[in-house]
Amino acid sequence: MRTLIRNGTVVNAGGALRADVLVDGETIAAVTAPGVFDTAENIIEADGRYVLPGGIDAHTHMEMPFGGTFSADTFATGTTAAAWGGTTTIIDFAVQAKGTSLLATLDKWHEKADSHCAVDYGFHMIVSDVNDQSLKEMESCIAAGVNSFKMFMAYPGVFYATDGEILRAMQKATDTGSMIMMHAENGIAIDELVAQAVAAGRTDPVEHGITRPPELEGEATSRAIQLAKVTGAPLYVVHLSARQALEAVAAARDTGQNVFAETCPQYLYLSIEDLAKPDFEGAKYVASPPLRPKDHQADLWRGLRTNDLSVVSTDHCPFCFVDQKQLGRGDFAKIPNGMPGVEHRMDLLHQGVVAGEITLARWVEVCSTTPARMFGLYPRKGVLAPGADADIVVYDPAARQTLSVETHHMNVDYSAYEGMSITGKVETVLSRGSVVIADGAFHGAEGHGRFLSRELSQYLV
Image 1 (cartoon, rainbow, N blue to C red):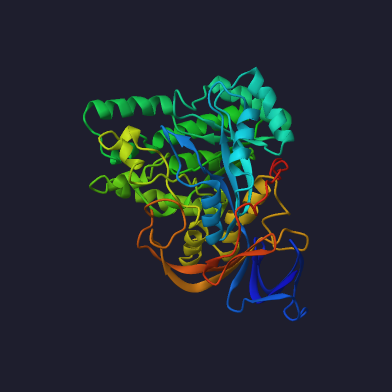
Image 2 (cartoon, rainbow, N blue to C red):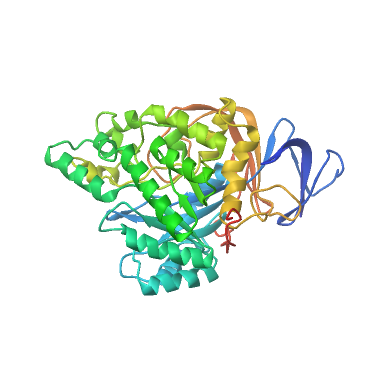
């Protein structure tokens, strides 16, 4: 079936123009001047609307084990919520447990996701156990379409890797052209600060932020960059939240080193003041790295403008306030770390366009095009061009909406942005040519999404 999206403003990373988009089956057949094509089985009027490539959220955690529980979104519910928000591809993390193999882990995540996702999906691999076997299995993962490997400088005893282990994994990445992703916080020092706070009776959620100071994110980021420099490995710093870390990334990029970083909407809009909300409400905002003082936000927006921050992902890892976040009542260290966000990323970054923080083209670039290039999906994804997958969002830039748990589709019992009034709203979403969101309703299906075997990053020099 052919679909014609006509009279809209097509926005790619290179700019915007008034154009029609013709879809034939699952791919884009043409992007033309308005009126070149006048017939199709399905016509979508897009006058006054933006027509965008579908969003790519390169950092999600569906059904992730953490602290004796699991993140609340399944691959079915999480990808459905993603579609509602204009995200048509997610890249989730397969989590290696200590003592297990990477390939067995990948098989386990395929069992969770295959035949359940509403939109297309890929995987990164979390490497928590560095040994000869896992280093060899990195090559097998690459052959299976998973070529990015996340490591942790935080969470001693769970995911933490020593500098020596990181160095070995980076050497393997250099040999294979794959990407090392890093959670950069000094976990050894943080654990000592946490123990001191708990021993002193300081147990409220705000202590999560106080015991993970931005200086320790900056230190770990600098250390990761130096290890990457020694080994020649590319480095992608996940969920960067602090100006100290951003300064380290910017300095490395200025020398031409293959260092990249993402931030998340929560660090652009929320702050440690949310962690300090009374009556344990602050637990809703516990994530790692933590929310920072508000004065970090201007630095992050500037980093997006200068491309020292290349991508905006969500780190979507929702835990319900009742029953899950409550596990940490009386001890902030036991609050499951994570926040919901996969549904609202495109909308929240559009607020940056409205406020003049970023341009329209940059919005598309950080939410779609750069993730596609960074993680080996371009030009299949991330662009409206002939031959690309017909992952398309028709976006009303003038619509008004209020974010709320009452209206979102994520499987979590609170909204991190409750009551926030925003401008702009997703109107229609196509996933590989199929309409999945239209007229305020979900028209997709569990299992529509396909696994994406990814190529190597296109940004390495």
